[in-house]
Amino acid sequence: MKPKNWGGLAIRKSAKINACLMAKQKSQIKNNHDSLATNITIAKYDISITSHNLSWNTLFPYLIRDVWLSRNRFLFQQVPFDSNLLANQAIQRATEYHFTAPQPSIPINKSQVHISWHKPPLSFYKLNINGSASNGLLGSRGIIRDENGRPLTSFHKFTSSGNALLAELWALHIGLTVAIQSGIENIIIETDAMLVTHLMNHPMKISINASL
Image (cartoon, rainbow, N blue to C red; front, side, top):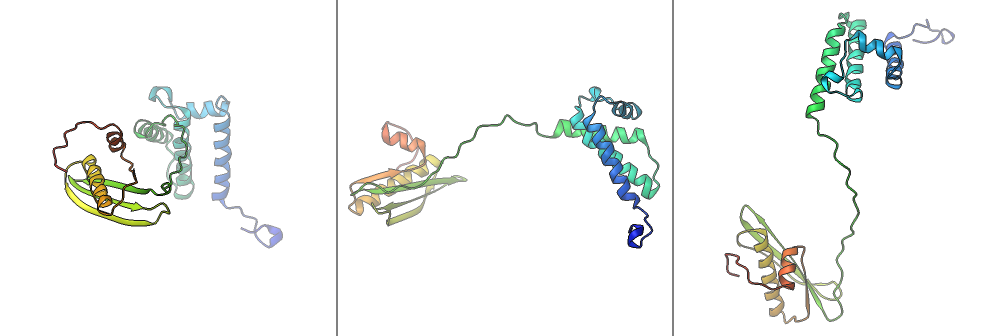
């Protein structure tokens, strides 16, 4: 309502007064854990925090929320204020959150890694390959670029069945075949498959259960 000097009746809204009082009470309880008001509140509502393995920081939001809702129901809907029911509901919700919510994990130090494509040296070409497997089906693809980064040719093919490693090896096989057919000799191979890179740098006999 408007104040008297503005032509009103100076009647304050009870809902706003209620909100201010609750905010003041919340601040007092939160900032003065050992105060008389806090101890009286805990004693009045028979709240046993330690018996439920709950910390005050976990229980407090649920308790103050239920106090707020019960006070509003009492003021605006004339619903009786049941302190025991209020406390039990707050403890029940806080306990449920305590045992079901994911626990905070140890923070991991993260660092940014900038990834970009680099042109090959003069008189060289670069073959980028990639392979993927989904439900046993394989897809292989790749592209060859010159020293200026201009694409010369590319390919994509559904090969056979197997795993992701086999898809990457198929991509390597097809890419090298395309390079040879195009008369390319000086070529750099680039892939994100570490195992394929290891196999190219350290040749060894392996069984893949498929013929390339």
